[in-house]
Length: 362
Image 1 (cartoon, one colour):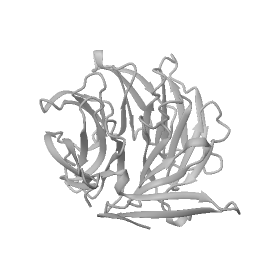
Image 2 (cartoon, helix red, strand yellow):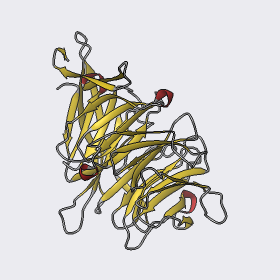
Image 3 (cartoon, helix red, strand yellow):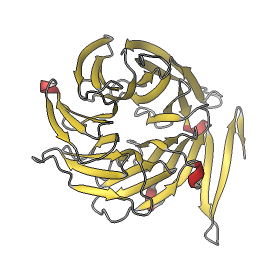
Image 4 (spheres, rainbow, N blue to C red):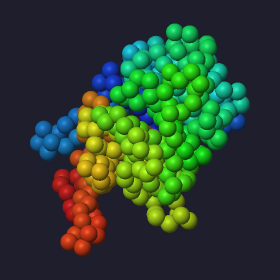
């Protein structure tokens, strides 16, 4: 399929993220779960998109630009938006490594945790020197790149592993965390007591939370993915109940649950939301108007999908990373199109259009 390209890498691919500065360049972080020392590498890749002038179809391919030998398994990565060649890695041994990917050079390594793996990391989008990381210790650490050797603050209200941390794109001081303890907490880094300002508990479905992301336009909207296939969208000003929820992957049966492993709002079209899960699917949703409707999906990966990202330079192209050791680049116009609508009885109906080379069939 020309609109889908599969790039095989060494080891499981735990995370993928595009650079907002370098056009069509993205990084992948890998983890050797089978090896005794849990090796890992940071790959820099360039996406190529040659559009067929006659059919107007995308022909995607990727090339590996660099391989940074991290020497420890990578759980999460994040590009800096100010230091445009710097990528930070959250590592299995509790350390943070910052790479200059242009020079394939390790800039600095600091030990954020001892004896606890880091599961998430995020760079502040507005105050570029602040870096957050969350770990299996249930703590969140804040670093300032001006003095990277010192932990600026520790936030410790969760009781289990921190699975995701995200700065609010529209508020330089606010960030969200989600945890295995089932809580989503909202924090203000300026707090002198390092206490959260709000706690979101889904009373209808209290369960472990795996991922979260802020809406890129509305600074109070937060999407959360849990281990029971669900996407839950909150107005963080109201902790009593979420705005909306949707079974997004797997089955509604608790005996056949499929964790939503990553969730991303789009920068270009803020109401678009992308998710991936243990059931190997990648899905794109429309969240406009307070509802969540499926618009696109693919089932290219052979094992669970760990992470997804939007291409900020081409809104038609997405990337996903999987435990099968691949990074898949896909054109939304050339994967399965989904039309969801309600009939006169209020029942949800689904119509799928599957892409085939040279045309489409329903």
